Length: 57
Image (cartoon, rainbow, N blue to C red; front, side, top):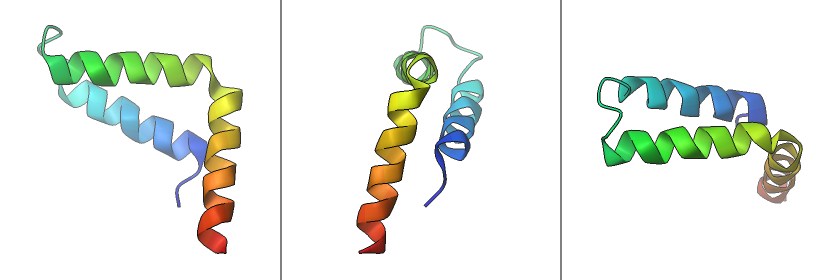
């Protein structure tokens, strides 16, 4: 499983793919998800860590 930084980077890349139309619903969803996660990075890191631990079991 990718780590939290890798997941956020992928989300950023996906967001850039849709950046040519800022009114597009997909862009809006990716943009707001990226902002929310980046502003709450500590909680996101905890979530990713717990999910990775579940996969190891």
